[in-house]
Each structure stands twice: as structure tokens, then as C-alpha cells.
Image 1 (cartoon, each protein chain N blue to C red):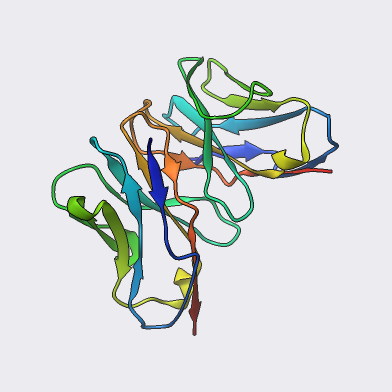
Image 2: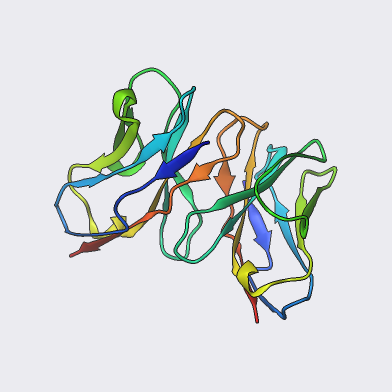
Amino acid sequence: DAGVTQSPTHLIKTRGQQVTLRCSPKSGHDTVSWYQQALGQGPQFIFQYYEEEERQRGNFPDRFSGHQFPNYSSELNVNALLLGDSALYLCASSQGPRNTIYFGEGSWLTVV
Amino acid sequence: AQSVSQHNHHVILSEAASLELGCNYSYGGTVNLFWYVQYPGQHLQLLLKYFSGDPLVKGIKGFEAEFIKSKFSFNLRKPSVQWSDTAEYFCASFPGANNLFFGTGTRLTVIP
């Protein structure tokens, strides 16, 4: 039973570029959330997807967008990358929006 | 507004010492509290959670936490730490809406 899987593991982008990160939820889970964890900080909630719709959003600009597919997998897109977007991006899944959350290992994004 | 604060940024202990990591939350309503652990190079793992009921919560790997409503605290404890407990520990809360609010984390280093 695979846990939450994310790709890519690491990537480097140039300021101004766009990036897409991918997430497959744990088997049986239908809800996906994304978090940003900057170095030395705790994870911060970006948004949550359930039934292919964005259900909740944290305090992140519109440059951060996402999508959930019918198979419950999800993408996080960040446009017009800034140096400050460099962080570990965590995907988390749960069975329904209010149950225990399980995290993936994250995608390390470095913006240069 | 919901927030979680962890007072200790870095704790260094010798093996067999007792551990207590502080966590305080600010939220007047129903609150659900969690402790997550992040071992070096690994994903966030749930140690324990409190939703309601017995305020003393037992988790995995010998950890426990006590919810003290009057003090808005949910401190993590372990009577005797091991070298393998070296990790980053995060306290988190969510008001039932499944967007976790994380503290800034406490790095625990256990010296053999």
C-alpha cells in the first residue's frame, strides 16, 4: 500500500519561470492538501482539494494554483517564481476533508 | 486567529534523559491537536493526536502528550529518549477544517 508519493524530489528553477509539482494520494484517500515548508519553519497550508475542487486556501497569492484529477491525484502550479518560493512543498492526503492527514516526502524547489 | 507556538527551537539531551517539548495554541473554540515528527530526510509522521476525551494521549514510540485546556498547552513528553529520537518535532492544530496550523518546530538532538 503506497503512501503519499510526490514528484519530482528535487528541482531547480530560474526566477520568473513556472513549476508544476505532482502528488498521488495514499490509496483510499480522496482529499489532497498542499503545504509549503521554508527552511527552519513549520509547514504552511496552501490549499486543499476535494472532489476536484479547491475547498480551502491559505494565505498564498494567486500565483499558486492547483488541480485535482478524477483519480484524486493533484498538481501544484506556481507561476512567476520568486526567490522566496524556494522551499519544501509537501503534499498530504486524507480520507475525506476532516480525517487524519498523511504526508509525502516533499518536493524540494530551489529558485535561483 | 488560530496559531500554535513552540517555545524551544533546539533541545539537546543525552540518551535516557526525559523529554518535554512545549506547545501552546491560541483558539477559543473546539481544537484538535497533533504532534508530528520529521526524521532527517523523511516525511512528516504523526506521533499522536487529541480530539476529545482523556487529556493524556499516548502515541507511538513511547511518546505521550497532555492537553491542559486552562493553560492552552499540549506538551509532548517521553520519559527516556534514545539517539533515534533525533528529529524535528512539530505541534499542529486544526479547528475541524482540516487545514493544519503548524508551529515552527523544535529540533531535538540526542547525544549517545
